[in-house]
Length: 255
Length: 302
Picture 1: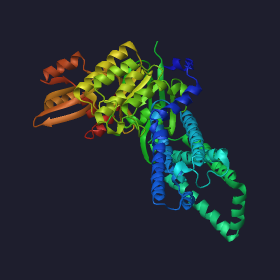
Picture 2: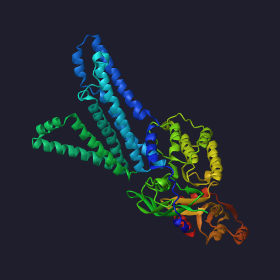
Picture 3: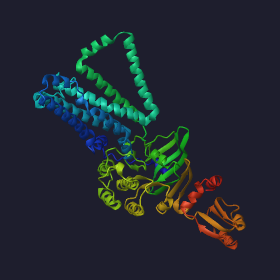
């Protein structure tokens, strides 16, 4: 029995690291409806509702100018995001357990999942930014509605719309995923600690800003950094979640 | 030549104040079929999760294929462990599991998997969460068999399987094992069902190993002696008794240990009947609550 210790490990390195990480991307895509199908069905549904509302208003000879202005404040363009937080949670909560059973390392799982998130965010960024342009070019899909050309979208060109969608999408996915890694590692107690700490930090920030009377300055600064600056902050938060999730998942255990 | 695949010493896993695995020492040799037996909650699944790097031990040393398993891709890729309570992605159908499996198991045999799917009549197009308990067990069994992983774990493979399916598993495992030898660890509390498959038995109870013995050695290692109470008592007086039953003036006692020719003659003279003990009966005697003190004696004697 002791003789084995001297036995060199036969390493079967035929499968590369890239393969081990990319197979996680494939695993997330085995059922493409999760990351691609359902979010676009939600968005498509929201678009259909907006179209019908637009048709009703136009048919009733409503004020089209004011309709487009009002629709700018609808959050329809962001409708799939709530679902995508859940996708981020489940990517870790369920797929992680499964991947461990199939012999993946936690490191490769997180890297593969991160690549998946980047791919999804990139594609959604391209799609949304392009739809904004189409909507503007077709004058609101022919009936003057504003679904994609809303909120901050459609004001500073394709690249800004792409960048902001990319950043927001990454944050949404990584927040769900990284909070779930905390749950897997420290269970409910850890998750609650993180959530309460986040709320406490936010309250402390509000208190400091209020007592020092720096809200106007803060708003001014926020206005000065513009859409690009604001979404760069979003992107930094996403990166913090991505790095934090990596550190936490390395010792996480499946349920 | 056979090598040691797993070597554990003092392996301990605690959940708060509960010790699930309590300082166990054991080794698994290459190309053998092991039974990891014990009652519900004995620590079987925890041991397998430790071996596959899913859990981290609090104490002790563990080597799988020569190194710590957790986070070592070259170790993990040689193992397959579908837990009895395995979680699957929400959107998974049975077909998705088999589609993904070849990316993870380099020895995956797709034709074999297809044959097994037909044998078990597994509905591929059904969502995993809609599968019955037996069908869920079948998914784990098919992945375990078709993966041909050098170290394959089957966690309660019989759970919910009907008699035909249990028989299929038994047959396919033996056939495939003969052609593609590998190390197999079967955890189960349905002991008689697998008794004949096993080459080596590790019995655990409350996180400790009660015994770790060759299955051949184990078969017939215990005997039940039955007859008049007085005769039984005198016969078993200086032997390790692991179980006792009595009815009026009759009694039977199960002793842990082999009987030689002289013992058998003496038993015959006393008018005692001797009967071999099945693996399941032996384990009930060793892990049952009725004779706890005796069972630890039995362990010492072993």
